[in-house]
Length: 433
Image 1 (cartoon, rainbow, N blue to C red):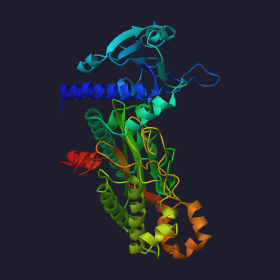
Image 2 (cartoon, helix red, strand yellow; image 1 turned 90 degrees about the vertical axis):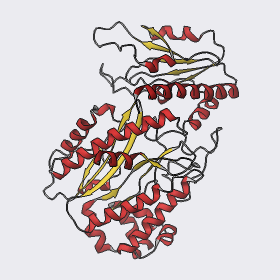
Image 3 (spheres, rainbow, N blue to C red; image 1 turned 60 degrees about the vertical axis):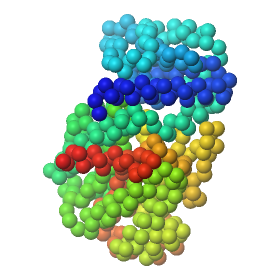
Image 4 (cartoon, helix red, strand yellow; image 1 turned 30 degrees about the horizontal axis):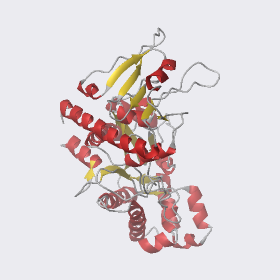
């Protein structure tokens, strides 16, 4: 898609946000909306800031990610206005006023002092202020968060582009692993391929070799290459105009039982992606993942119970302790995942599955991750060995596979009126063509 087409979609996107804000403000008795970009936190006993992360409600309106202390002001019946922070500063370079056709959808007013900003909405009546440390009236914020789950055409295109960037990084990381680079070197190759700095990543990259793949949010980057390099799990994303990709792939260093297990899990993951259809309860996708993985483990001889029985006895939870996925958008774990309506009433998670982040019904425009996993986690295995589940586990096979850590395969998928759109598989296919 050409940039002028994306700019037109952005203008339509802003119109959608205005309509949503109109309804939220009217329903809660407010006259105007003020959204703060936020400000960086200062490190303790220091004068340096932590990396700045913009308020997602701000970047929903304004694709400016790296300039704190900006403000979005919207009053129904008026054009949205951005107070754009441009201080007089010789320690740092002040941000340039954004250029490009997309900026025509908003009015822009430079400010040099954030303390002057409240004057811009002093005469707008009752104002709902959204941002870190602000009032954040729940009757407004809850409705805005709920509606963010359905993406506009502009947002869908931004997510496609973010995914394409992330896929470039994944291909570079796979090549680095194959030539026996360290976790750290592989991470750096990923960033270089994405042309993004570490702080521009939507989350800390998970670059895990061997047993490290059994740590769900493994946070280190080993500088040395293991003498026996067996497996690689990478969970890493990218951003485009503030929208996040979230992609995971698993690899074996050589053919064998673990490589075969990855291929089998890939089939399971593709089948689950096909379930991302409008009208589907995402909780059922999660339970379907447990049944499918239960059947897979039974088929390869890892466990003695088939899918439904493995789910009912908690056996699948030994090997898959996390949710099957979450909403994706301006945040990696986008807000509103367990909201059942615009008033914020919660849709309960299935009993025994406390870590599922998404319980909503799927509808066109909702973008989710689908990330089944199969891990060999010592603490969970020890607990299973000590209770009735242990009798259904092939412990010699566990010991043979435990040094590989685990498997996770994750795609970004949009529900539509017809077939799901898999941004991740499409991007890998285009890169391979």
